[in-house]
Length: 437
Ligand code: GLU
Image (tube, rainbow, N blue to C red; front, side):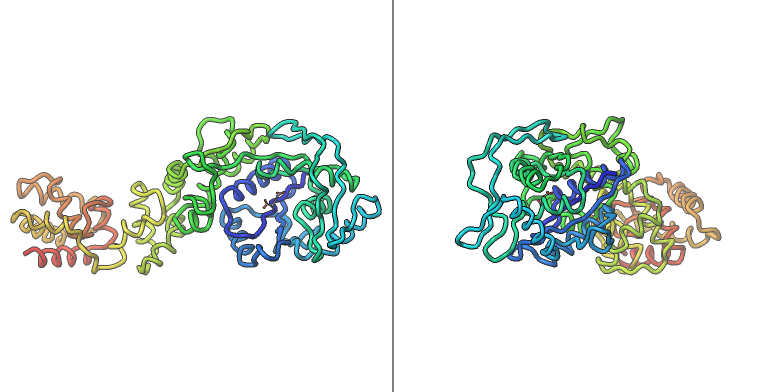
């Protein structure tokens, strides 16, 4: 049975590189029917915060990277916070002492005696990487204050939690010989490593915390992305599945995943492409799903949803016009309020020609007589009104759109009128007539 883990250090937000590492671990676990573990590497009291840990869990949950063992999920290898595992580390240090592989310095620091032999990492992505016998000083594993350093706890927990594979960022490859040296000293078999390429900015520089698209919560959760779209996009950063097309369900991604296909060149992040994915996913949602995804953005913009069915149809009517959920409120606000503003250019256009008034009045009268209020009866009414005044319906459409929404762009006029209802349609046209007349 394969066992893999994501082992974040809670020093800040969940970064897209971290999310992608978690994702590859998850894909591998699901593909092989194994177990995906979350372990929080929080032994650095000065840099780690509980807030950061919670933020990382929140980001992982949002992306649907559900772990089988770890915080809140339990498991028989807990606790899953390294800060709570000190007795285990003490016991492992005693093993190294017994084997004569550590010594205590005058300062109180405990150092591990490197084997000083060449060490080869058999990496699934990078191939065999051999490190010559080191000339570095022996490695501190326990600080004078009794706290343990990253390399030590990382290896102890990979042994204790019975990891079979480790997918992690390429930045760790250069230290992997130290980990293997420790595994050997414990008489344990190292896991199979797969060091995955880093994610770079579009200009090839290393992506840092402040770069566009780097923080999962700030750049994706709060910016109107759908988790499925981000999941799909991140999978393709450093891996090209052997299949046609790029929009792939989680299930297909799991089925297609093959660690041997992970690139060994760094990946470049592309926000436009990520948004393109989001647009594809957004357009594939049902009206109800779309509403449930964008509800918080509509409510945060200050609009309240009274009629669920109208709201669902309203957001659905603009799905082709947006890539992000955050763009939706500006497209649909007039469905949720009658005191919507009129764009400046809309007012100018409405007042530009005297016949506009006549046309709008005529449309209003025609709408008033309709006994059935459907998209098709509304459409016919618009066409007939225009014809009666020797205009093309194309001339009346924008005027009605201006009147009903205050905007120059949006879904079909008959869709708007149908959704806001006959009474509101008449009121809005009359109100507009009052403004321009
Ligand atoms: N805590 C390490 C990090 O966040 C994990 C390294 C590993 O996956 O082994 O980079």
